Image (cartoon, rainbow, N blue to C red; front, top):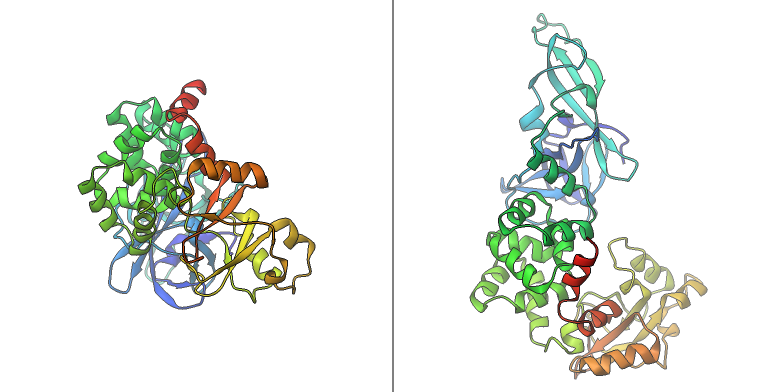
Length: 413
């Protein structure tokens, strides 16, 4: 990964997936200007697909930037990019803009802007290249001056009104803190904040709000944005939320979701909410019998995998997507850590661990977790196929009082 990149050279650069197959070209870079002496945060890139559709790719999906291409990892949402409140496009909004470097009086033009990974791993704007307003004589190169980002007023605004400052502060908060702020807001203010937040942060914050507030907030978003947020939620949480919506509204949102994400939610909606099937996620760590310990550890090492799901891998006959082929058993991560990398996982299965059944009620599920001292458990259907996994937080969520999230947010004030 490059340490510092001037953004103008990215325009038109090929974007490829992790296998090297072309996806499109870089069109622009999306940043969030911040107050309080903080460098602008790079939120993502705008990629132009070969169909001339421009889509948004969060920086978390940008695996590498080198001299000839940008490598994208994971799935990319193919919906058309729409700029949100608080977002600035570097090439479209800032390049060629006239400015005055702080501490000087001579007007200059922003010729280029560079970005680099910050201390916390997030990309930030770090420098700008300025040139004099007067044009250079033919055949001569302009005189560049490289300055720090905070010497350019356009990158470090001194003053914003109170409302904009509050939104800017929220954009940097942990999702749990965002949820607490949303809980205390008026409905109109919630909409402003929701429109400014990225999909992933809003999804995580939504998951921590009381059910009625989740419904109220998702209902005031336009269907496409609401569908984007549902796609970022854990499938079981998204299914719980969709189940609380009027049937017509729920169907509109499902039709706006990516087909594979919508199908996960539809499958979960077939189960009663208080059963293992209704509580489970359809995305556990699944391996074939001939997979090795090294294969298993590579899967559970995924930083996007919740810790509870990483505690166990499930061995099945193909196909490996849920509902899988026949469920063969589960292997604890502690066992994986004690075995040679070349050992096959099928030989490490815990023979004493029985799976849950999709129609097992909450009472059965809670006793199961207490008996086996588990944080995650496999769920099978009547054909002995693995259909998902229940985590201990899913069980607690259904055992606590219905309004426990609201109580917790009120007590945190």
